[in-house]
Image (tube, rainbow, N blue to C red; front, top):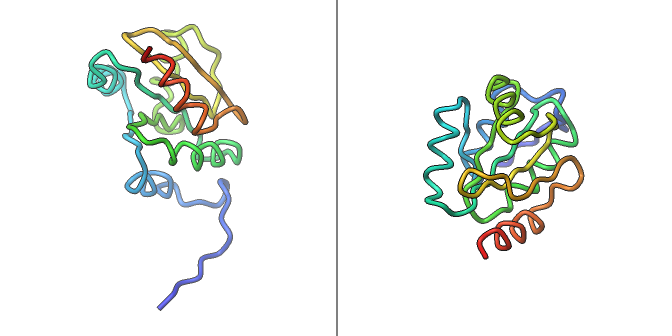
Length: 133
């Protein structure tokens, strides 16, 4: 039996839709500073990928689909659920708030970032490889 779903966009998605989608993607939701620090520590000095995502933005939905193709763990910060954490990221790495936004952090230092239409899985993976050199 097949099910037909209505056309979806960011504005008409149920609130939990993006979180439910995480189950099949490389994402680990990060909702607070403690979980951010744990995620970064779990990289053991290797490059870690953070993805700031808005579940009400079409550009962010496109970036989400891109990031789902990354072949390693991605810490996802859903800004509607974790605004204080988003503010901490902005402060910690001296970045302007943007969504979507990808950061690659190695040993506590920001080594690469991209936002909006520059978020592409292949470029993220190339930047991670470069950060590991």
